[in-house]
Length: 112
Length: 118
Image (cartoon, rainbow over all chains, first blue to last red; front, side, top):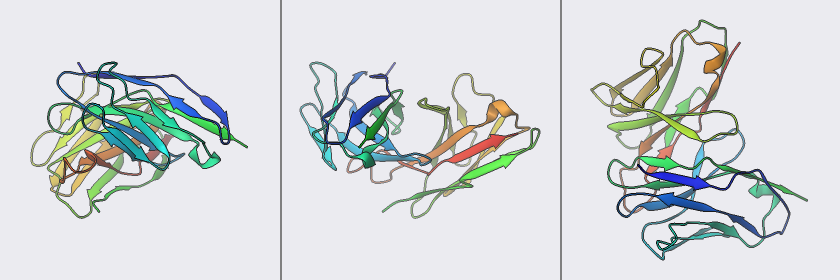
């Protein structure tokens, strides 16, 4: 079945540091890939997405590129802020019904 | 844009109580809604798919009699945790498929309900 593997957290960075959160996937067919963010006590918000190979999703300084050859969708940001502290989920949909498969989530803590 | 509203956002109740959580699609119709459970510091676990006018589809290992799902209208699904116990304490999140799929995200999420059973 479909699955998503994320690097374990927590990830602790100083403000303005470079961020990478690794995500790899297994899916049949050609999945769409997503990063969701969950701030403390809140639901999930879509951060960015990519629907086909070599697409780059970007939003709020975050980027991720759909790499079919390595089945990866790593999340990056050049300079993190304290306000980026949250849990980040990599996810995919494949097939029908918009059913999402989530990774385990990676908690990011950014300090001053 | 399309929005999903979840209520209540926080509930604390005594063991043995049944608790109902509502999930509404505010400006679109949703024949399907999803219910997730999130344990502390863990990922979202899909509990069930709520189907308007028919029975919900439960994921393996989810107790149907414990987590009752009703999808009585095209804009409302409810999850009732029956005879709740402390181990049912968790963060519950609902979502509904985006009617404009293909151009946007696949699901719109509610803000979640934190359930604490004493």
